Image (cartoon, rainbow over all chains, first blue to last red; front, side, top):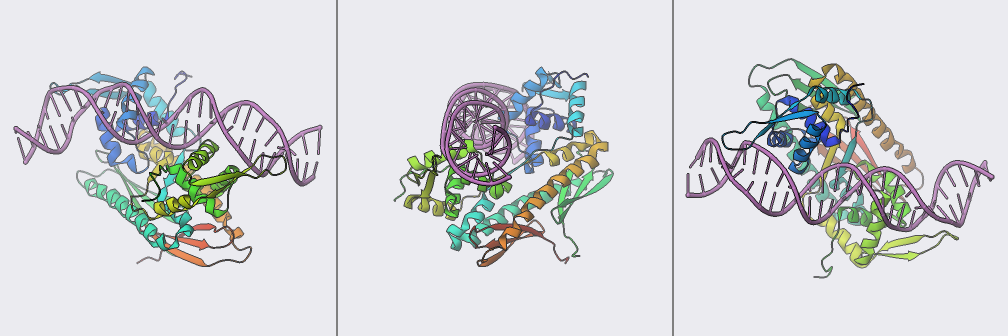
Length: 185
Length: 185
DNA sequence: AGGTGCATGTAACAGGTTACATGATTAA
DNA sequence: TTAATCATGTAACCTGTTACATGCACCT
C-alpha cells in the first residue's frame, strides 16, 4: 500500500540492486558493472547518471555530496522505499526479461550462402567464448582472499547442461559462475 | 572497388541473410525470424519493412509487386551487390556482436538482498530455459520430412560445454541446436 | 458471418550508445 | 611532469518496440 506508483525501469532496477553492494557513486557503479554484471547486463554512464537522478526524484535513493578533496563526489544509498522496491522486484513473478543478440550464431545460420567460410565463423564464436570464460574465471582468485563466507551452490538446468553457481558471502558477495561437466546417463 | 560505400546495419544484415532462404515478403521474413533466429536475433515489423526499403535504395535487394489475388504483396530478391554484401559480411573478421540481457541472472546476482527469494528466482530461470529448449526441439520433427540433405555437425566449445549443431540442407535449410552431454575427463 | 492468417506500413515512444566537456587526485 | 584513475554529466544520435491503421483471402 505504501510505495505510491513506483516507476522502476530496467536500468533503475540494476542501479538499485547494485547500491547494497556498497558501490555508491555513479563511477563506482559503472566500474563494478563492467567487472561483474556486464556478462549478463551492461550499463553505460549515459544511463547510470540520469537514472540516479530519476531514482532520487522518486525517493528510492538518496544522494549526499561527499567530495574527496576538491573532487566532486556524490554518494548514494537506498531509502526505505528503495529497499522495498528492490525487494518487491526480486519477489515479483513476472517472467524475467531475456534478450540475446549473437551475430556469430546469425552468421552460422546464414552460412549456406558461403559454406567455405563456416569454419572461420565457428572459430570466431569459439574465440568469443574463450575470452568470456577467461574473464569469468579471473574473478575467482579474488574470492579466496579474506575469510570466506557461507557457500551456496545452485544447480541450474540450462538445456541438458548444468551450471554451478557458487556464492561467496565474503566482503564483496562475489558471484562465480562455472560450467560443469555432466556425467553421461 | 565495386560496392560503393555500402551502409549495412545489423538489421540489414539479417534481412539480407534471410532472403536466400526463399523468404521473400516482409511478412514471410518476420514469420521465419520468429520461428528460427529469434533465439539469437529477433526483429520486428517496425524494423523489417523500413529496412527492406533502405536496402532497395542501396540496390542490395530488388522488390517487385506480386499481388496474391487482390492482396498487395511485394516479393524481394537479392541483387548482385546484395549477394556480394552478404558474402563480404560473412567473411569479415570483425569481432561479431554479442549482447545478452538476462534479468533472471541479475536477480540472482542481487539476491543477497532477499535470500529467501533465491530458490524462486532459480525456478524462474529454469522455467525460461525449459520453454526455450522445448521450442528449439520442436523444430526438429520437421527436419525428417522430405528428403534430407547433407548433414554437417559442428562442435562448439562454449566454456566447458559442447554444443552440437546439425545442419540439414533440406528445402528449408533448417538449423537444429542441441546441447550435448559431455563425457567427464 | 466471423475468425484466423496473409500482407504492408508508420508514428510515437522508449531505451541505449558515443562522443564530448570538464576537472581533481594519485602514482610512476 | 605526465599518465592513469576518479568523478560527473549531457547532447546527439541510433535502434528497437508497441500500438495502431488498413484490407484481402480462406476456412468453418
